[in-house]
Image (cartoon, rainbow, N blue to C red):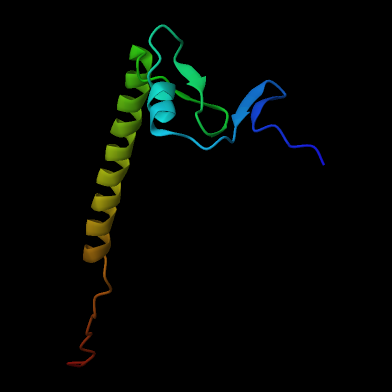
Length: 96
């Protein structure tokens, strides 16, 4: 039985299933002169090239959205604490 290739392209999308080394991981995410997206060092598809300034804008926007979501979740938890059921006692005595 023939060995399956561990890297290549399938329908124009790159894949690489070779065991990654630390140097390959580091160099895959820092490629000056390349575009914003580069091939992943392990797996299928593309990843951000941190040597490109546009990638840092994407990271900053994602971080801001995550922070905003966490703030909204914290506010919702505070509202739930104040929206607990309240016991109401009605005195139904008639003075007639």
